[in-house]
Image (spheres, rainbow, N blue to C red):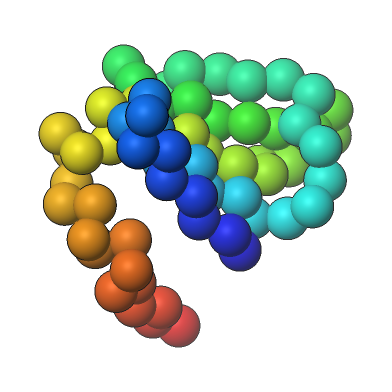
Length: 65
């Protein structure tokens, strides 16, 4: 998984795998889900990211299994 934040456009992109998406769907305003043609989720883009959560949290992620 890779997370990228673009300060210039205030967008965060979370990429789950290296496959290329073939379609996108806005699940809620400003949250875009990217899928392969087999409907596998490959990424999530969050627009206006700094308004939705503190950007510093991107650097302190915790994974729970």
